[in-house]
Image 1: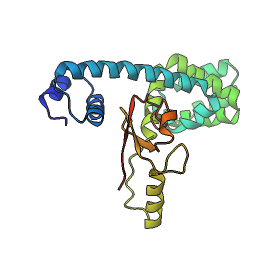
Image 2 (image 1 turned 90 degrees about the vertical axis):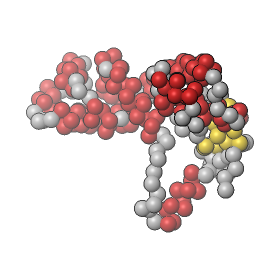
Image 3 (image 1 turned 90 degrees about the horizontal axis):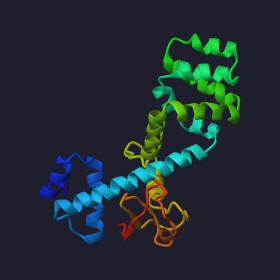
Length: 229
């Protein structure tokens, strides 16, 4: 699938490999055949890139529409690991009277940035949503790249690839049954693959009502019926 001259040419042009793979899979699922010309593949890749940018904008807007408390709870671990400018953020929170001087000094005395960040987040969460909003708004204004990383990480985490072999048999069966159950009605078996994301998460009755995939929030351009053995 990925070793044809047409696909190789697209990769040599610098297109993202995962995007190329997703686009090729979509083509094969919908038409039954791979791309025959570089021009056709490049045209679809450019369209896919435009759609990806629009989806990122929508996810960004959705993230900003959620309250600050939810944002901090959701991204606590990732923020602790990735936030580098904690000193500037602490200064801002002190100026806005979100934290007290003694709280500022206590956190500032921590030896590592990660420890400072973790304690700062816990402190802000203890003060409620208004304090968390100030924290989140500072991230939005001063560290957009971090915000995008958080959204990308959430997207990846939405569809984890788990190895069930180490789990007890009963738990394996429960997980497999859960995977095969429609994520909308939670009743019927999944049998619809969304194009172009490739997620198999809904039944044929629920699929027509969805504009976006409930897993990755990607725009649904088409569907393919599948039959599980």
